[in-house]
Image (cartoon, rainbow, N blue to C red; front, top):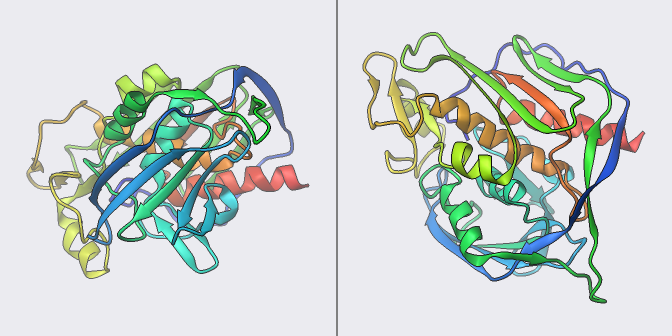
Length: 313
């Protein structure tokens, strides 16, 4: 997640819509070949937590398990409004800061996965990127997912068939029809010269994600830290899990991994949030060219929710 707000005014969301279809990807649904376990600090809670990832059956999709019983699917139906992160909630039970983990699972092609969080309600932030998740998934390996009867399932992907958009003020997301998965993202922090206006564009596949996106870290503005902490946020934040930029003196804990690392991290977040469009082990990220500017978790989730509503009509 970005720890810095980059959203414009509060005009009502607008959208063009009506045509979304699904097509085969030519692949079978996948799951983990072995358990993955990573521990760390929850960014906002400050609690020490452990995330355990287990193989899941074909068609189950990705889901969290709370208290060993309550299943919270990682789908848009369970996304709720929250500050500076993406949160899922069911029956009054929530799991916070899910975006980096879901981003890695979506990009790496882990379609079905059971996720258990121990020690709190927040996914550990690790180094503020998805790098360690990608490495752990690679170490565990993947395999074809099967259902209770031992059958595999073909993986489908949503297709954007005509342009769609949402906006608030000067912040927007546009989805254009495309035969590939492509993202172009822009951010603009005119009062923070070391960040300024940045753009990054890339096609989305597992290799590009691991090399160009996964290691980009969360970022925040130094002058905003006290306000966020007073609001009960980033209690576990540190220079070990975020890159910090001062409006006056620039980056405080460089060097950056990429010259436009903040912008690349926004793409990481967007993939995690769009993974919530996934259903029953199928892909969440649509065949489209997504163009986003000064967006963020709230606008990402609103757009995905609108896509889901189109399918219900």
